[in-house]
Each structure stands twice: as structure tokens, then as C-alpha cells.
Length: 477
Ligand SMILES: [Zn+2]
Ligand SMILES: [Zn+2]
Image 1: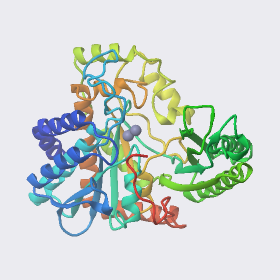
Image 2: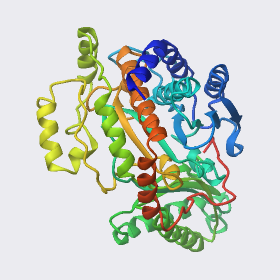
Image 3: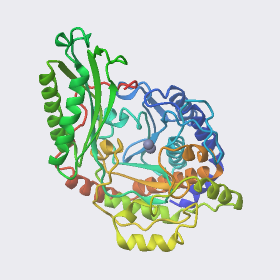
């Protein structure tokens, strides 16, 4: 179909999508507590005539909206959760919270969800007009920042029936995402001992705090003996109490293990479990553990990545006004950028040289160009629950510029810019690329076939869900 038509429709309706994004920015709800955001999306989907399903996988804020019928079925993934302690007034170039201690959209999920929704609405419009045939499904995916919502949805059997899934993420570059990332698993360990007066009767006490400390020491020694793909992170949730003259009867530690795939993350986790048991034995305390969440590594799909890259190059890039550039420059002056922008600049020398030329040695605050694309197998250090979707259907994603170049992730700067015309322009670009790529998939079965063949080859071992069958999402964790 004529992509100019898709672009034109999105341009015409742009204000509606900006308003939805701004509303979600204002709600800024934490993982698995996105009740207001989910309600806004559900009523918007109903208004647009989508068939809505709510409470997917038993999650109160997971939902979907479908339109059309028959094959192919293309999924578009939307997120909307925010981060704690990142409340920030919009359009300011200094940190100033809107609400003290409040939450903020530091990862731009207000834009992420609204652009995904906009793309789904544009596709619906074309299906309705008889220009495209197939089904589009918008997924409202809660709890990306915590709880790994998509892994719970994947465990419940969702995504498997899709022909492909597309997504995007706000960023400081216009760039197709390639390579893989890490699989993660989080467990909370609780030690229970016996309280006692630390001076009068220390011999009757059994310190849970000692156990937690010994576990952490044991894990530090494990670090030397892990594969290079593995990482371990921890935090102490409860040290027992504030009185040093008490033998602490309880302590809780949270661990996150990371590896290149779920299978290897589980192997590392088994070693951490043993260390916890050892620490309990040494201190004559008891230890129990429970899973908090987990995510799979990404299975990249070069066929879909190339399609996104083509559509990213074909879509009209935002043109920024002098005012927008001045604001971006002022905001970018509040941090030290960490090297050149773009994920591939860390991996590929040719890409690095090209980006150096494009950024004019980093003098532009907004990267108004498309990054060079090279399909890569490298493992990026982060993680995302999009990984779980990518084990169940061919999946690809990209970033569009909504932030200033080199902006730190999860920052007040990204909250500040999140309602600006700069962010809105990135939202619209992302919607155009998603809609145009999905339209290609509906019209070109050969692309879907090639994407499926690559997917089958890369997922021969099958999906190993990082979540245990009885793990429940815990928004308080
Ligand atoms: Zn994030
Ligand atoms: Zn994010």
C-alpha cells in the first residue's frame, strides 16, 4: 500500500496520540500498578473499535486490542509503566520534582505505548478501508521496569500465535536494535534466626544478619569462577533492625543473576542457592527463597531488523525548530555523555567512524539522522522482557529520538523532555515506522516466511521460561 497514506493518517490524528502520551506521563504509575494508564488505553481501544481483552495472564493491568481477521497476525507491543523517585516538571533544564518523592516516566514508556497504539490505529484504518488484510493486535504490557510483565504473559501462552511482533523504545538515536542482551532471574532470600540480648546472652542468639553477610561474602568469592557472560547483583532489603545490641532474628537479601540465556542463568542461580544454604548452616539459621521475576535474552531477527531499517530510512525524519534545539542544548549541558551514541558504536569500528562524521564530533544535542545498521550477535549488558516475546514469535525493535544525545537512562532529563514537541516528533516517527513495517508484513508473505525460518533456526532449543510455574508477580517487591 501507499505508505504516504499511512503517514498522512498519522499526521492528521497526531494530536490524539500526543494527548494520550501526555496523560500517561502525568499518571506515571509504577509496575503492575498502572490502573489509570490501562483504563485510558482500554477506553481508547474501545473507542477505535478494537476487540478488547482485559486481565491477560491474570495480570490486572495487562490487556490487548485486536482488529481485523485472519492471517497474518501482527503484534505491536506497548508499555506504560514509570519509575519511582523520578518526578520532574516538564520542560525544565534543572532537576525539580513535580511531586516530592513521586514517580516519573524516566524510560519514556508514555511515548512507547502511545506510538505503538498509534501504529495499531493506523493499521486498523487501512484494514477498514480494504487497503490491508490481516489482524493487528496491540498488547498493553505492564510491569516492564519491574515484575517482567511480558514473561508472565508468555508463560500464560500469549504471543505464540503471532506471525511477528514489533516494538520500539524511546532513545537518543534513530536506530534498529540488534544483537542480544542478558537473561535475568531475581530471587529474594530470607534468613530466620533467634533474637537475643547481644551482651547478656549472645550464645542463645542465632543471627540472620550474620547469615546474610556470609552469603554475600560467599557470592563475592563465586564471582571469580563464573563464565564471562555472567553477572551478579544484590541489595539488602532487611538487615534485621536498627539496634546493634540485639542479635538480629531476620534478614532479607535480593539477588539478580544474569547470563547469556535463561538456561545458563538458572545454572548460576543454583550456585547462589547453595551459598545461601551454606550461610544458613554456618549460622544455624534457616533460609527460604522465592522468585521475584525473570526475563529471557533477546532472539534477534535479521529479516525483521532489515525491514525496520528500510522503513526507518523511508519515513520523514523530524525537523527541529530553533527553539527545540536551544532547549535540547541546555538540557544536554546537564550531563556528561558516555561516548558516542548508538549501541553499535561500542561494537563496530566502521559504524563508529560513520557516527563520528554524522554527529560532527558530538556537537548536536539531537541526533537527527538514522544510525548505520549492521546485524550483530553481540550481547548488550541490559535486559528487557521483550526477550520473552522474541522466543515465541519473530520479533524486532528500534529506537527513535525522543531524548537528547547521550542522555542518561532513567533520568530526570528524560522525564523533563517527555512531554515536549521533540518527544512528540519521535513518537510520530516511531508510529510511522511501526505501521509501515507491519503493512509490509501484511502484504509480503515472503518476508514473514524468511523471518520465521530464521526464528525457527535460532530457537531450536525451545523457550525456557525464566519464571517458575508458581511465581506470582509482586508489585511490592
Ligand atoms: Zn527502563
Ligand atoms: Zn524502557
